[in-house]
Length: 96
Image (cartoon, rainbow, N blue to C red; front, side, top):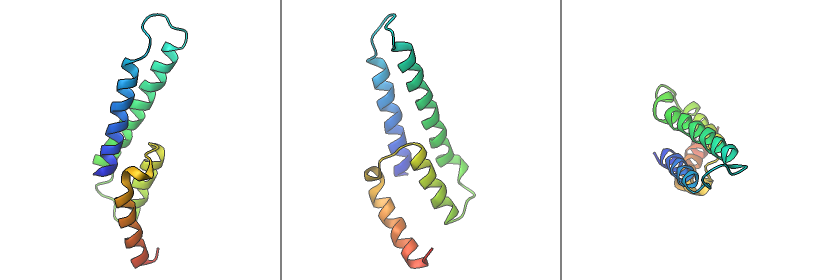
Protein backbone atom coordinates (compact mmCIF):
# COMPACT_ATOMS: atom_id res chain seq x y z
CA UNK A 1 0.00 0.00 0.00
CA UNK A 2 1.37 3.38 -1.02
CA UNK A 3 0.21 5.13 2.14
CA UNK A 4 2.08 2.58 4.24
CA UNK A 5 5.22 3.16 2.18
CA UNK A 6 4.90 6.93 2.65
CA UNK A 7 4.61 6.46 6.40
CA UNK A 8 7.58 4.08 6.42
CA UNK A 9 9.58 6.70 4.50
CA UNK A 10 8.74 9.34 7.12
CA UNK A 11 9.86 6.98 9.89
CA UNK A 12 13.17 6.40 8.11
CA UNK A 13 13.67 10.13 7.55
CA UNK A 14 13.09 10.90 11.23
CA UNK A 15 15.52 8.12 12.16
CA UNK A 16 18.16 9.67 9.91
CA UNK A 17 17.55 13.11 11.41
CA UNK A 18 17.98 11.67 14.91
CA UNK A 19 21.45 10.41 13.99
CA UNK A 20 22.44 13.95 12.97
CA UNK A 21 21.59 15.54 16.31
CA UNK A 22 24.57 17.06 18.12
CA UNK A 23 26.31 14.72 20.53
CA UNK A 24 26.69 15.45 24.22
CA UNK A 25 24.78 17.81 26.46
CA UNK A 26 23.40 20.16 23.83
CA UNK A 27 20.56 22.25 25.35
CA UNK A 28 17.83 21.11 22.97
CA UNK A 29 19.12 17.65 22.01
CA UNK A 30 17.07 15.75 24.57
CA UNK A 31 13.90 17.63 23.64
CA UNK A 32 14.35 17.12 19.88
CA UNK A 33 15.28 13.47 20.37
CA UNK A 34 12.17 12.90 22.49
CA UNK A 35 10.03 14.69 19.93
CA UNK A 36 11.39 12.56 17.07
CA UNK A 37 10.92 9.40 19.16
CA UNK A 38 7.30 10.31 19.88
CA UNK A 39 6.63 11.01 16.21
CA UNK A 40 8.24 7.71 15.16
CA UNK A 41 6.03 5.80 17.62
CA UNK A 42 2.93 7.63 16.38
CA UNK A 43 3.78 6.88 12.76
CA UNK A 44 4.43 3.24 13.65
CA UNK A 45 0.98 3.01 15.23
CA UNK A 46 -0.58 4.54 12.12
CA UNK A 47 1.24 2.02 9.94
CA UNK A 48 0.09 -0.84 12.16
CA UNK A 49 -3.51 0.37 11.89
CA UNK A 50 -3.21 0.43 8.11
CA UNK A 51 -1.75 -3.05 7.92
CA UNK A 52 -3.84 -4.78 10.59
CA UNK A 53 -6.60 -2.61 12.01
CA UNK A 54 -8.69 -1.98 8.91
CA UNK A 55 -8.99 -5.52 7.54
CA UNK A 56 -12.61 -5.95 8.59
CA UNK A 57 -13.78 -2.51 7.50
CA UNK A 58 -15.89 -2.18 4.38
CA UNK A 59 -15.97 0.69 1.94
CA UNK A 60 -16.53 3.61 2.31
CA UNK A 61 -15.65 3.25 6.02
CA UNK A 62 -12.24 1.82 5.12
CA UNK A 63 -11.49 4.74 2.78
CA UNK A 64 -12.42 7.22 5.52
CA UNK A 65 -10.17 5.42 8.00
CA UNK A 66 -7.26 5.51 5.54
CA UNK A 67 -7.81 9.23 4.93
CA UNK A 68 -7.82 9.83 8.68
CA UNK A 69 -4.51 7.96 9.04
CA UNK A 70 -3.12 10.02 6.17
CA UNK A 71 -4.16 13.21 7.99
CA UNK A 72 -2.81 12.10 11.37
CA UNK A 73 0.50 10.97 9.86
CA UNK A 74 0.73 14.21 7.87
CA UNK A 75 1.38 12.35 4.63
CA UNK A 76 1.49 14.83 1.77
CA UNK A 77 -1.25 14.17 -0.82
CA UNK A 78 1.33 14.09 -3.62
CA UNK A 79 2.74 10.89 -2.08
CA UNK A 80 -0.60 9.14 -2.64
CA UNK A 81 -1.93 11.16 -5.57
CA UNK A 82 -2.81 8.22 -7.83
CA UNK A 83 -4.72 6.49 -5.02
CA UNK A 84 -6.62 9.67 -4.18
CA UNK A 85 -7.61 10.10 -7.83
CA UNK A 86 -8.84 6.51 -7.87
CA UNK A 87 -10.86 7.13 -4.72
CA UNK A 88 -12.42 10.24 -6.25
CA UNK A 89 -13.48 8.25 -9.32
CA UNK A 90 -15.12 5.62 -7.13
CA UNK A 91 -16.88 8.26 -5.04
CA UNK A 92 -18.14 9.99 -8.18
CA UNK A 93 -19.65 6.71 -9.39
CA UNK A 94 -21.44 5.98 -6.15
CA UNK A 95 -22.17 9.65 -5.32
CA UNK A 96 -21.35 9.60 -1.62
